[in-house]
Image 1 (cartoon, rainbow, N blue to C red):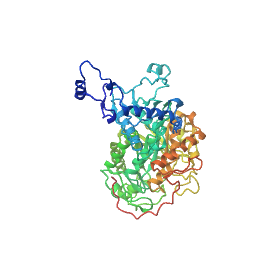
Image 2 (cartoon, helix red, strand yellow):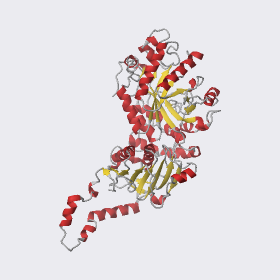
Image 3 (cartoon, rainbow, N blue to C red):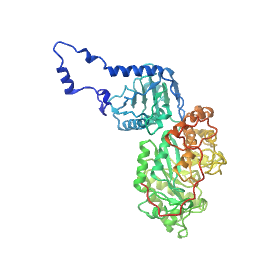
Length: 603
């Protein structure tokens, strides 16, 4: 163990003899003699060294190429002579920063099930040597590997080589893998890349007999956009905490860093608000088709937020206003324009419900709800919806949005809204989420000129509830059919006319759930399109290439199958041959929903 090392017991086979035991051994030596056996490797150690040497000489090349990563890295410099094989006695070495150490723990957690290795995490004052090293400080790379530029060199080059908040550098040599970054978030993204560079069997939940080879070379990587996300609608159909956590895992795997939760709609209210308890006990009782519904308690929501934060994903909660509010009106008819409670709604039409924009009680409600949700959410964003409020027109609509934007600012958060809020007055930092299907949108372009930024979710490219093909058993087609190529073939930086590239904050892939009822169906609609959106958000424009992407994406089919993840075997992707245990690529139509029932919180 290096000076300053702490923590983690080494593997028993490599534990050094120390302290009193070492002194006792020295006392047994006859005076004036030197026992040379103490300086010779034991027979077992010699045999193991010979086995490893032979194995290295006979080993096949790494089954994955250095550039076979999704999203595509910014820089790839392969070195076929520098492949690394993870040894059974490897440890993960990391510096003392607690966030970096947590990333190291997650790396070990990812690798232990399939490898069966102990992979202890060793904390050192300066982690530099070993099979797996994570460091927040620029360290001297192994011999033959180009060193990172110094801060002075970065400054002289205008900072072009700085890794930034999310970037990382990954060096693979015959003696080890080093991931270096400026932040723990960058280290985490580097870990996800290392995961993809190992054989697909690394996704197995149980030990696999395999050589864990990583292709040699250097990757330098950082994102194109700071906001890269997906949306899950938990209102049309409710999904429990465990399902949401699995969705977070899918995002993290592809370096998506925001999970937008559509928490409220006509069919159900899914987040507990202490000051308005009937929102969940009454408003959360139903879902599309008359199913049971459900909701998240404050503890449930905090659990989701914590789980996401550990994976460097920010939760973006949406409270849809002033429309899409039938569930709230059923619970509190005082918010309705006619003060009459509408019946619960379990259909899929839109645009018929709204809170009264002329009532002060409405703004008491908005302030209470947004205040409580903001207090539960450490991230910077609050999403206020704002779309399809067809019965709130003109000044009544823009006045409501402007007042709600001020309420959001009062919570210390930054407002996001669907692009229909564009005509309202600008609020500092506000973001419009654009879901149009025609890139000519002068109203949105004008809002950008007034200071708004955009998250792009074009309905005919990024909406994951659209069918892949006419025979897809679930989903819609109002925005067209979206196969993998259509999800991939567009450029966020130039998609909306009149919007400069620097006004684009990022991309998001929404999944509305009118027809999606299970986790397997979520995964089927996510994969393989979600990695396409992830690459548009992460990789430089120069790296976008459909032919190359489809080849890289094909290698992920065996990974998903090994992990037990459902996905669509899209015909435009050259998937490897089916393997035993692969998840079926087709789905049967959803079962008839069950009858309504009293909602229960998840846990």
